[in-house]
Image (cartoon, rainbow, N blue to C red; front, side):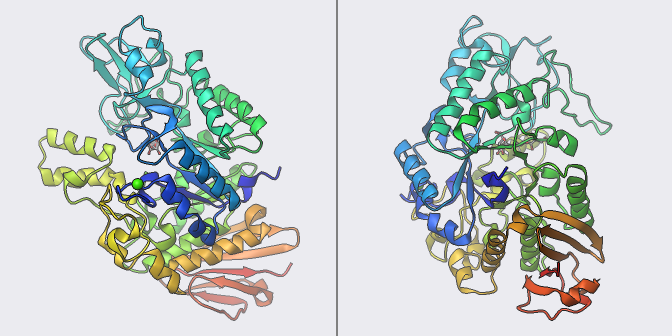
Length: 538
Ligand code: ISL
Ligand code: CA
């Protein structure tokens, strides 16, 4: 009991895009260290940083060439150590990304593995014979196309769940496991507080390599290439090996739409939490959908720890996703209130606190995301025009949410003195930290308020969540602990909406996302997209 992450607000940073200290256009550890006081001011308690290991960066570091060194774009091991120290000095915890499923095709293990069938590293990866010049089975890569790549030298195919430059390790080989456990220990020894385990439910594939079923629309159902037997045992071992380091937070990225499957990875000896994408990646600004997902979590899995997020580096920014051109800021504050007052671990993706918007490259040369590049060229191959290919590629383009953090109105939005690795958007002129700091009504200042409310009241961190209701487009719920009880009202409609509740008369106004003060009565009339928090009599 009493684990640090149960009370934490976690902030995700996309490594190359936060702050560039040396003008090469790429964010780095020195830059991150410079911005820690900003994060302290915002009030977050933990950081999750995306991969920083030596990498050819085909997938921005999710393709690792050396698990033991820092990519020179990001700095040195010394810079990392200073960063860890400075993070801890401010009472912040550090979660790093751990990619156990695959390595870069430039990793020495794979280079060796390719040499011959008899090579000692051959079975560190998944090699198979094809049939009649076809891949071993029908498995598709999550980035498009076959998941098998032919290697003419040894006349076999190797398996890659993502791009062909991200080669899946063979976790049925105990040597792979030992080698990767050494990697985990190396970083825990350096003092990190948690691991975000990338695609952890992909670690093993079906050992008969059965074909995946195809649904009625001709789409592949990923049945045999994830969630396979043996993965939970590995997770148990990881859990065990972290024990001697104290409270290490094990956070899993489990790609599954089924909440039951997701939750099966969480437990005392397993993962501490997994991302719930069912909530996080909701596309429509629809109270019904959000309410249903919350209800499923709280009713069926009340003994587990939830994650609360609406954005990360793989999906569109929610402010853009939920936008119809009106009330963007009100909606952003509403979502912030939900994430920061509901039961679960809140995640803020960098830039959400100032309402950063999605970006769409206008030319293929500006696309940085491997998934979008694959889509672009696949679409051209199908005979579509360049313009159509760009449009289709931009749909899956994860560059959307990866643009440089908008610090101020200056050159390159204050991110870098050089040419940023990915384009910035003109929107930074109005959407930036410096400007919002000055504006009392900004999204930034609202985040600060609500974060400090959560940090200052245990009830929002660990209190029970009860009375979840959806009525008149208002999602409401209560949080309570010991003698404290709060009511949270979230109006998801663009109209005034009424909420009746006799106890309101004796309640104490705490916060509104729009108004400074509300006089409470048995009835409260919420403004369009307004969030209101009141303290109820006990
Ligand atoms: O598998 C999925 C859906 O069932 C995907 O959503 C998958 O979970 C997701 O693409 C995995 O993302 C993570 O691993 C990738 C990397 O490109 C992403 O940035 C990372 O978040 C490969 O390492
Ligand atoms: Ca740099």
